[in-house]
Length: 208
Length: 419
Image (cartoon, rainbow over all chains, first blue to last red):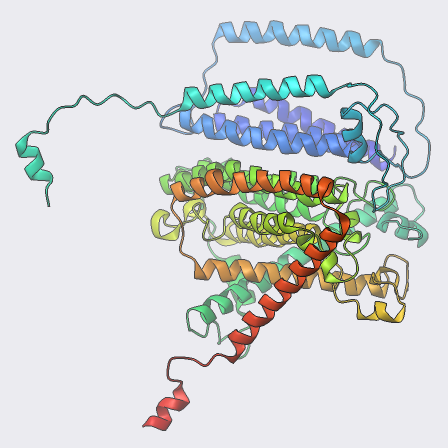
């Protein structure tokens, strides 16, 4: 068993354990911490498999996301940041049914998998992020083996078809709508103050 | 460049042929070197911070331990912290309280494994001696350090600590956006996210540095540096600590080694964000004054004296020294800011980011795109040269003014003479 296999099993085991701990713990801040470990472990597996961009994206998005989760968990639950979450029977049942269904789907799809062919030996040369951008803009001629040089070559990609740009833009607009909605919901609601003249006694009391 | 490879291949070449042994040895060597570097740099920076603050406040600073300049003060502090009582408050969430400093330190440490100190000298390479997304990776893991700080604030069972943690969260979520937009500017110019490749495009004289590329990159550098100071929670953005308001903020309840871990993380992060700034804007490991290139030698030192190994060459060692020196200079500027500027209020922190820095970074990003598309090449060269020349003259003038000015206050010798 190679070093990479050992590392994979260790990482996958830790990720799975912390995922279980997210569910089992009753403190919301602890659950968020375990969630951070789960997502960081997933990012580690991406790095181990050579998908650097995906791993860094996972870290960038989900570490910040977990952070916001902690903040809202602390601010929105109660005065006590270490609130214990109680789980009722109904939640147990719903969770059990959902997770069993998901497990079934995963097992069925795993059973249909075949063992991948052995990866070719030698140094891995992955496409740089420049090509990711090119593919996103619809260039289908980006070859997966490109020399990783310092200076970018001045070949302008011919845009064949818009492949992922439309879904990307749709997602951006969707996120923008969500952002504005969240800002609308979370804005400070000012009560309309009735214009009443202050009584003379209080005005005198306030005056220095 | 000829063959580029990492420590793993180096150990394999030295005869560690058992499968996996070279990888493990390379990983251990990198980890030990990096942890040692961060710890030593933190010790040095703490001493430097004391001396810089003393100089700015017209004091002497540490003078007792280690001669007149007090070089051993950090070591003495370290010993004191090591033997200090380690306590966990009864109201704290013990497990999270113990975990938080390590989360903070791990974030900083993991950022360092993508930081190339010289050509090919980064701990992690994804094949061919480069890490194709280095700068994105560093930005991603540096936010984990902030998570440790917020965790410390939430788990301390202390209202001051909780305030500090929440402030840090609000500050970090806001300042990440303009910081990332400013990082995009040199990435856009270079066409790659690989820090080493970005630096290799800035070799040669210092007007090749991206900070002098056009007016927009010049603004982007200062905007990035402001956001970087905020992301290190350094004054004037140290709302998470705010000694005069929140006792000590997020680390109110910490003592001993755990407290020391927070400070190693803070000084490590300062070095890491300075390293990103150096690579993106300030030419990375290039000196900027390659006088030797006038005599026909290559401007980049990396291939000079390839002994004992192409990657462990003497030239690369010099490059690493130049890079570290530039980062130290930027860290010193951060200290200078800390001891000169007063802390700004939380609403000022937010408005500085959302009203000023965010629009500036958006304009800079658009401007650099338009500059690349529409400005003719000769005009670009004229602007780059005049920016570089103007900045050099400015720095020299300030330096001359600083070192030639006489004090307005009577010196001790003058006082004696008057008497």
